[in-house]
Length: 248
Image 1 (cartoon, rainbow, N blue to C red):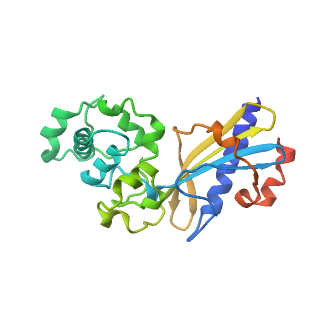
Image 2: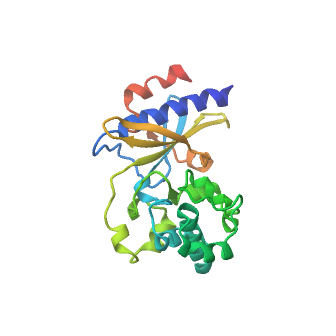
């Protein structure tokens, strides 16, 4: 019951942050590269992570060179990364120029579907990626930005380091944020129980952010709870944090 109660509160807070991120040039003063931000209020410790999808590589829009860099940032060797990038292109397009190399090099569970990726989780159907944690895939790729470029300052440290000095035309310009991943995890002081929620929110023209999908890679970072010293007022607003004492 405690887990459910805290998870419902976490879900509500993802909506609060989505509302604060809505609109042009919206800024909640938090990093958008998935770094954890811990705060406390009314006996609750809250860890928030935000990821702007401008800092991720879009599986449906990036070319095979940028896709290969994304796979390499996951620790895969150059040859495997190149094979996966070609396989991803063939998976989404069915273009004959990729057919021979893709079929020979990469086995895909269920076969190549020749349609756009609907979810980053589909990458786990690719044999070389089955052992890669889902959270790592979601921290590198997206299907929500619609951009063939990405913003290195919002990328994972591994991806940002790997692309430094490479393909500058793909990394120098910040693309408008088309989507955000918002994760919130909550722990009550003196209790080991954690409630959490994570969602992908997409920008819709004139309508702010709307929830697009659940984030299946949302895993609470227990180590981050120990770093909570700041107030939660700047993150969620004092009007929201003032209700925590009643809600908990």
